Image 1 (cartoon, rainbow, N blue to C red):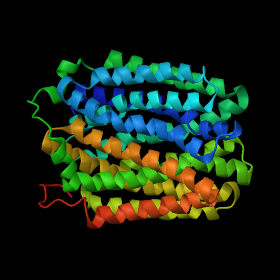
Image 2 (image 1 turned 180 degrees about the horizontal axis):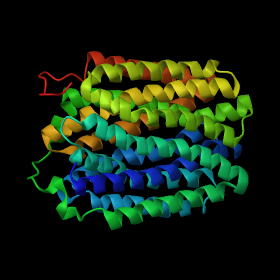
Image 3 (image 1 turned 60 degrees about the vertical axis):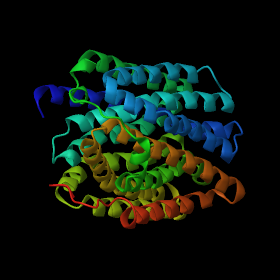
Image 4 (image 1 turned 90 degrees about the vertical axis):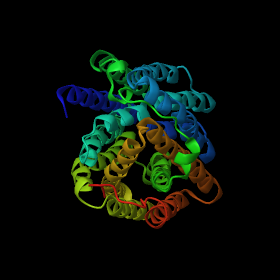
Length: 395
């Protein structure tokens, strides 16, 4: 990377780390809070589903807008919107109010996450996409890893309001850093070349993109099940504290974050599709084992395996996406499509898991997530995700 690109990467890395840490502080506390005020399993699912719904609807617009107008404006707006929304959480105590706020938080995320990922894809050196995206993914996973632990500790010490305040302050810090350190939108590489029109039908019918979409959907379906209902399982059946629940989630996400860079480097050298398949299998079997895990140690071990599996597959998955976006000269649009997959998977995982909890039992939630993950992994390996022709130097 050149000097300017290193500064851009460092700014994006730190900004997303502090922002995602703030999100991680709050998200694991929401299902327990909603459950304590009488929310049903479906209502808890809607708490996550409303966020995922708006995050699924808006990325195509924001991604393509950033391809044409630049990345910086949407990044700054998204970060500052996160800070504002954190304050709104403090104004609502009903489940319906929390669901509405989560919908608006999803819009802010739609303006932020795919655009930042596209920006990193823009500056990733050719042939080192895996290492670059793996290093960047560390910021998100480490932030999500530290966040739940901090959130549980903050709630136990000062209450839920303090956790929301921490989320807002960290997002504000990220927005100020992005505004001060990122170059003007007109200086970005994405605007240096003519932008052809994107035919969404062509993108959505592309076999590689469909395969990447399917895998991302299955992976985040499992994540939606875990983030929505593992805290409920740990509190209701194992009597764990908020801090203990946060530490379990932190362990899984931290291990996923730590493995991002080495797995990204591996993705630059070895077959990316095989790495994705291996990681998907580990994630799927880990989900299936949650219901059999006993106490704190058992849940921690299973989440550790889930995190390692996620680390194996996500860097390779993002590297394939960056290569695809670069070939088609529409990085923002490709990242937007995968953000839609991410969000619909989270939404479906949370809502369907809620139905499984209400109609069957809490124990049925995680085998269901495992089945979806493994099925999507097989569809990626044997259906989508294959290029008819090999790109030079690509796996």
